Image (tube, rainbow, N blue to C red):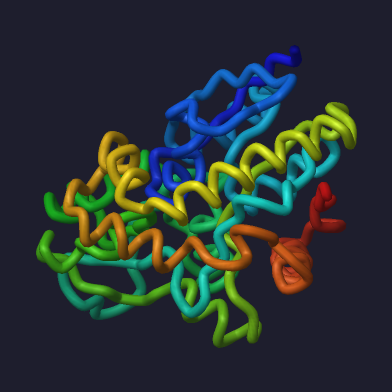
Length: 268
């Protein structure tokens, strides 16, 4: 029996994917999995510290971790014309002086740097603090991720820019938001067993999304069922099942624009 520590975010597309594993409904022969649920930036930092064997990561963080971690072919989120959203209390009259972002290693922060390199005053706070801080007037603008893209209007905030749509317009490719990383030194056999367990868990959630909704609701920041389902519909697609050639090319483009030497290896 091989014990592995596995990190995932509380984002609905992650808890949908992991529903079968979290609830013990999927066989994991030869594997003993311990799950850690955390904010994506916390997961990025945990992977960098080497405290996770497998974990969800922003693809921006995966670029810097490619010497130790590879990307599993299952579990990725690609944004097709959608992605992190830049929000403000009111339409901006000019360039914002103070912008909030959900973590230095997040893909949201990397998109902001790539699309708006002139905006140098960026503060990094936990993702769920951004909308409250904007409402309180504590910053000019902020980049929101997860369920925030569906609920910002209810919070009295304005959409300034969908960074994913801007990225796709510039590159002609969807934005690679995040995926599951595994330690390279685990080896091909363990990678294959991990992928099989994750694939079975995803297939189970797709067969019975109402049961998966219970798991997602337990961890979601936004409790409205329609918002949770919207999130899954938007980010769980064929490329979640298998990242594929399009996903590989998106990662290569992200690496190129970020100035990284090469994208991480795809395992499987």
